[in-house]
Length: 321
Image 1: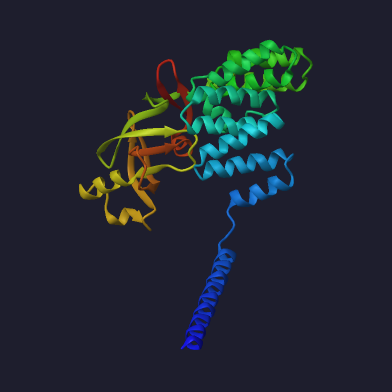
Image 2: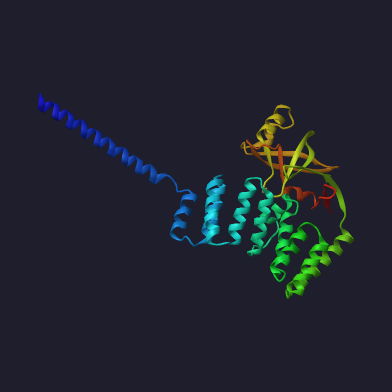
């Protein structure tokens, strides 16, 4: 009897041990099959080379893409203690923008410019400058006033002014850079003057689309296939998009047909009217189910109407031909 009991317990323990071993093997196999995320990969890379600021910038970008703003902020705070680079300041500006704090983003964009970031067209610096009503320009000007011999800052101010269609200011800033010894600024001055004269001679405003500010974004009125709708102009977006709620409403009320929807990811709008007679035909909108705004129009699609100038004083988008 005693011997039988011992054998039964022994066999039970063997079975439990075998089961644990099998489960362990399955866990190892599942872990091996799971792909390594960008955050995990970059975290390991940063541990190996902690002084590589480029890797740290990529890690922060990956954290922001995952929506982990807390971890991104912690990573940035540590990185900025080690080194202050243009890349890190741009990531900090992105983090501020994710928190809807465009003015703090503007300060970090200005610091990025001072650290060597060139404000190229359609980049974060221009985006933040537009959202903050020229705050990046203001902060860069403040830095340039404190560091009057910094040619990079004056050239950056000229580029920002050109983006805002402020030709007078752009010429003044390029002129300052030229007098400080930047010979290339003279070519920029000549090109700007020639362009301005050419525009005055041949270009004309063919339409003005009134806009209002909605959460620091431009909002215009229009209609899709006859349905009045609010449209947000997003200068940072790469694709125009439509919300799931709006798509369902338009289908239900026959402003759209099922033939206008492709693979549940795209919606083709046959007629989008903007302002006074401005028309976009066969516009492809990316379908985003959880999007809050009815329609978001990217700058690339808006430019199909002509050259765009945002007149903030009169609050109109001017279409120039």
